[in-house]
Length: 242
Image 1 (cartoon, rainbow, N blue to C red):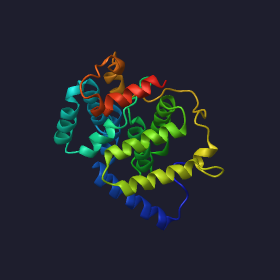
Image 2 (cartoon, rainbow, N blue to C red):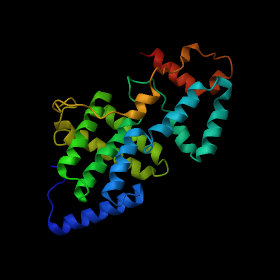
Image 3 (cartoon, one colour):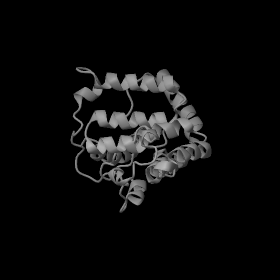
Image 4 (spheres, one colour):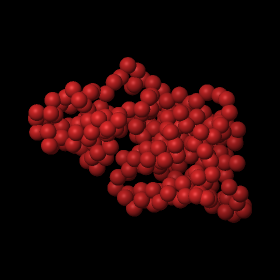
């Protein structure tokens, strides 16, 4: 069941709220616009994966002496210094074929499917036919509910760093979901069978990560202001700790 049971009046109010959010957050007013947005999330034309990746790549590929210049340029170009800071302080090695904050973009993809069904723009079967492949993609990308949640929260903070109180509310909700014995995530194994079938293809990840390797942080000179380059120091520490 995609939507919890509700009375008619409550259901009408909920659908009205969802349509307002779809219109204001996504510019979605119809089935066609919903389907277009889902396709754009998959390709990376919409969502946050591409923007996050561009900042990450520039930070890693910039030489030591260019670190502060890259930070300043990215902050000025995107008018999002907080977002740039979030990327710079959350650098970790890539895991397989998964882009950072995949959990955020495809978590929202799944929610759009649910809302689309609730608003009558998708049948329940159409929604599930998109949700299950997306869930398979996420299941293959993370090792646990906790890993998924960490990347989801990182994506939300990157998307809207100025809404700190809302972000902390989401963080608290995630804690409750994991809290046994009644937290929903505590009752469902992360590796729960999703039956046989294909995972949704992250076409952005496939294009960006084809033959890509992160620069080796142990091969970068630390001679230039080493104590003022937290990006490579942080990445090097995490590589050495493996």
